[in-house]
Image 1 (tube, rainbow, N blue to C red):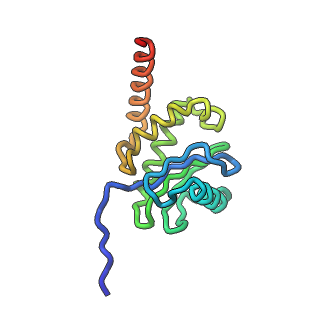
Image 2: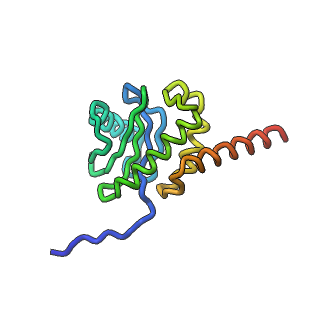
Image 3: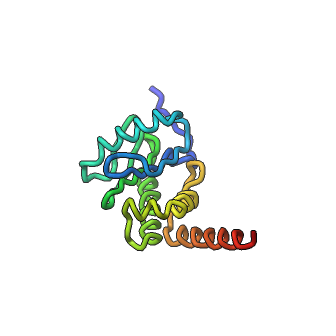
Length: 160
């Protein structure tokens, strides 16, 4: 029997999700076509929330995917990769996202604060992962680039 040899790939992350206490989507970014429609995405999100919101573990295998997750007050953060993906790499992305948001929100990582700062969340996620490829895992660097991007946006808006 031949062993299945997988080609190494930079495309590590399949999705990043943030759900609230009820399992409703606050943020979702999918990097491939595993769940092509919004209906399929929302069904997957409900399933993942139902399987993880009552547990204390940090890793789950669900529907052939590796899911790492963390909760904070009334938010649930998920980073999803393929079943053969390195959990430590996915956890590095999760920790970077959480720590970056924690710094940006002054350690007030909760639904209301996040909703008031969605632009920062979008910028942070784009600095950490691009098209499923991990770009950055240092929260200090992510926060630095988010602040720089915000300054540039203010500068351009003043020039108009």
